[in-house]
Amino acid sequence: MLPLYVQYYQTGTYNPTPDWKTISETPNTAIIAADRAHGIIIGHYAMTSAINKARKHDIGIVNIVNSGHMGAIGYFPMMAAKENMIGICAIAAGNGILPTFAAEPRLGTNPIAFAAPSGREAPFLFDAATSA
Image 1 (cartoon, rainbow, N blue to C red):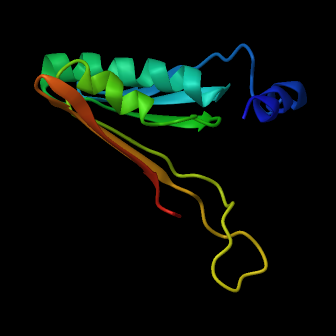
Image 2 (image 1 turned 45 degrees about the vertical axis):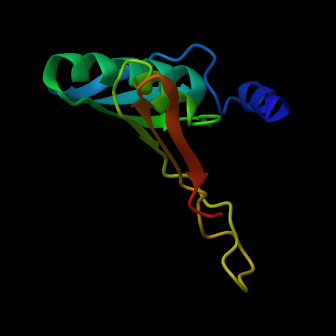
């Protein structure tokens, strides 16, 4: 993925100095306009915000718009599991998958991951793409 990330920065697809803004917020929720930030960077920020909201109000949901590739999304719900919380991350991905007999991509990989603490054992983690 690194060569692709470099290309995205070189072509301006990713903003190397994003000015993300919270465009809507309640005690439990937030929507962040990411200004073409790399998804790995803004994802960490968003999950940290969701965890902080959940600490205060039992649930925290943060949505990101206008960001780049999130990498291995299982990382983000694991942040919550390490705080003794259940974490979920889901992404609406662009068209990149060919449906059966199709000539052009029409489906996104639409990955989803969730993690939960499991006492003294390692946290439970599920991380998959719905196109698999």
